[in-house]
Length: 107
Length: 120
Image 1 (tube, each protein chain N blue to C red):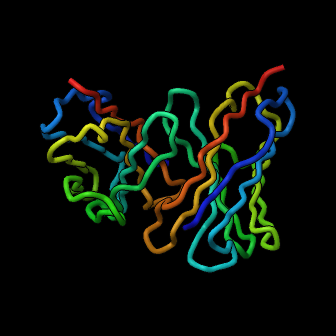
Image 2: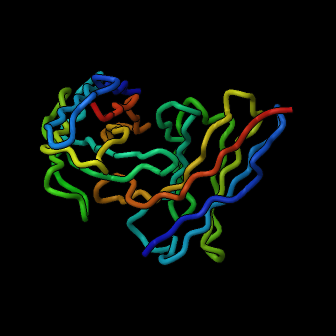
């Protein structure tokens, strides 16, 4: 199975600043990568699919990029509601695997 | 608006079978284009995809759990179910049901999740 490595594990950012999260699959997944946001006590919410396409209703401050074995989720200007845990997931090979998550916390 | 809701016991004894049901509202399980999945999250940990079922009944399970997992569907009730046998404390987790969209192969709707604790 493909192992997904996310870094950093925790990212401390001030509101209004930019956040850059990394996801690296153990083998190429082409552009078959999604990003999810999870807040405490809630289910994950789909943010990005196909590496760079925002899901319905997702603000433009969220953007995804990359292909193959290197992907990035960028939040251009962090809002209070963006402090959460972010997971990447590859959907190139079954089983579809998730990364360990990056927690974005208030600095 | 599609909604999913998990139901089932919150406490299961070791070696027994964990059984959960996901009831779907606001949309039909029988409509094509979606796969109906179970995903779990160990306390404070990441997400683990368990398996999925298509409305026709075809399934795919995570190889790491395949020997213990059964997912079934009841289209008449608009429900799908998970059975996980021979559970241990390592199966303690929040279990989510989710709808997977075939076109994007992503989970676009999730249940709220239900905590299942394995303990005697």
